[in-house]
Length: 551
Image 1 (cartoon, rainbow, N blue to C red):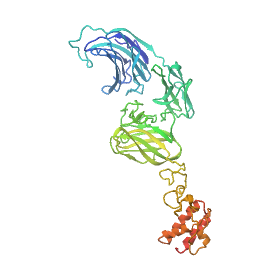
Image 2 (cartoon, rainbow, N blue to C red; image 1 turned 60 degrees about the vertical axis):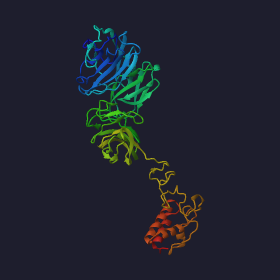
Image 3 (tube, rainbow, N blue to C red; image 1 turned 180 degrees about the horizontal axis):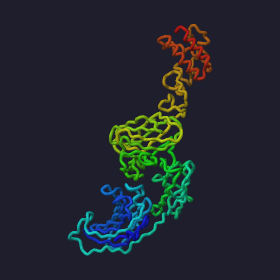
Image 4 (cartoon, rainbow, N blue to C red; image 1 turned 90 degrees about the vertical axis):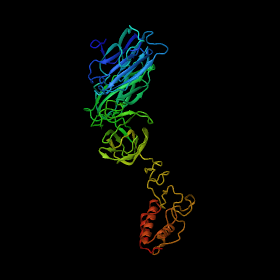
């Protein structure tokens, strides 16, 4: 028995009150098929099994959806329920599904036992195939591949007793009130999304989504979320919440256009901010050849964005969500970003069972990282962080491309951040000769590798700077440079100390006159940079050393 042409529905509560037969080989079902196979032959256009039952297991039922591609590329998702202490043959029971945009729920006697919100069709974008009219079927099979044939224990006749089948229109419970479907919005301005909830006092906070990405949530009416400086593109908005009874509520999708046409666009409606973190699954809208190139048209992992070609799966990495997987050399994925100018470290979270992984990042077509090579991590979900340093980016909106050069691996997220700089002097800690104290000029008077700001004995005279009256120069001169005026050679600095001992040390370290001049030049440059002498004094001493006899 079927309702095709007499009853065809999209997004409804469909229920049946019935008592099941019993016995080996007995297979009743209450199910739904598409009224028009617009997404392709079974199961590309879907199937919803409200209840299936095997008479050989009279306490157990199944709720299932079939989807994916046309046979033999079809897949299914199923959940069973076992009735405690009784059988479905003993009495009448109520079997139902609540079918909404992006979610299907299964009930027995109004007890929720299964929820499905992830599926796909090779024939169209999510929530296809479950977004068109379906009709109801009732049948009782004897034998078949699932139950097997009846045997000697099976008693005939058997009865599949149906009290009624009812179909209810499901109010969405939550509705986007602004913007409205088909709106064309100017890019660059703030977009406020508003939603109305029928029973706001009994629901959790309302989440606002673009596609599968949660943009934000609001816990109090009027429910709204503002996307600042929304980028040009075509977007699909939804609002979702959950009733305190556990029921998920989802609005009808609202499709809007920002700007003219549907160009490549950031998935979350605005460019990702740099510095910041970028989730690999939030690649741009635009499709194959525009926002990404994937060697296989199917989403192998079927997660998050199941109708697009980039392969995504659920990740066990910290933070959860989805990761890009099944990559092969030559594939690429693009992300629209808005960068502050600066020098950055780029970190990419990867996992792989095989060695030889190589990737690089381009910004507006320019390779900024060079090849980043890494070994196997010990598993497809054993994650590690790889890094490229000193990546210089200009300011403004630009397109970042993640390019796969070699190997097979998974990618979870990309983090672009300024290098660690504990003292805030704009010199990265990894090259800062005094990372604890600001010293942007990186002065190192004695050349020992410790910056002057951190050196406990900067003049190397064996007296700690804290007790040294002349911690950068000499308390009393011991030598002069032959052939020069002693006042120039002894060189009283701004701290009241002279540099004769340091000049003598430069002479001792020199193997020839040229070495001596170079040592004195470095010494005087450091004294000038420290503010102890003027440029004129600096030049006088260097000239003196150049014309003098080596002491």
